[in-house]
Image (cartoon, one colour):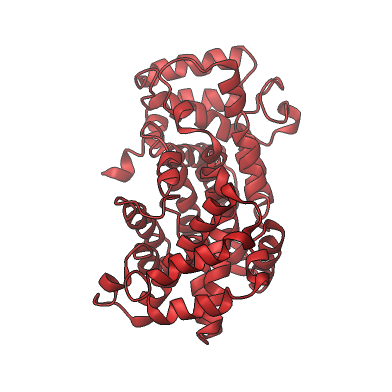
Length: 412
């Protein structure tokens, strides 16, 4: 397995950008929560390592949210089903070795202090979770107030009073006191504006240097991205995993280098991350998309590139992932690249994406059998859409490709 030189903070930042796509009206929510939590932690005199842990958990605290309807519910100050996404987020973070220490903090970031204080957890974990809960509610209150009055200073007293009312009940008293101190200045509230938050988070990213991550370590982080997007619709669960599995299998048949095979697998896992912006009803629609809906869908591969390009060392992976709807004749999207401008890896992912999609049930059709899939692939070669040599490779290994696309061997 190959190694990758990656800035872990850049990867986390990019995951936060992807999560922002779920709730377009709450862009930068995770970043604002991380900022406010860190400022409260500083008042509490927490160490640099503790603050870094808090910031990472804050920026990723909603990684269990894929569905836009759930995201809207979380904009309510109280919602009885709010802990569901905490459990999902904790589970996906625990699956990534480098991010697993954040899982308990994320699991309890909607747990009231009165319940949290008696749990068998380290005190710092409880404080981290409760701090994120508190400032998460601050951000939700702030967003609600801005809808009524754009000048946030008009609503500061109302927000602070609402948080103070929950002292000793929802929130640890010392955390409330820290928030009351840090939020007493106008500068704190002005700092929640997008321009400041972006600069603050960029500084945090720059504090982390590039480090060598093994392929399994990096894949475990990347799988968080794929899980979040695949969970958006019941019809696309395991789609990204299946595309990654098949793309890697085809890459090995093509005798690509080990580094290319590792990278093509990562690109397969990441190719649909831009779909988090696509409204749920479009992904779940049982009939043909309207022209307007299809144009909305066509944006997702462009968003995929914009998210991934921020990670140094991911330049090729970002391009391969975003090219999965490009076609040999230049008739794809979003760049209209033809075969001369498409790498073998991008063309392989495009075939894997079509194959896997046809092998899965969709709201508008049942899953297709291997030979039916092959017939459609052959038609797309004839129409100038897919690479003939790769489709021929699929035809020569049709059963194995079908098993790779549906992760059959990995489930045994």
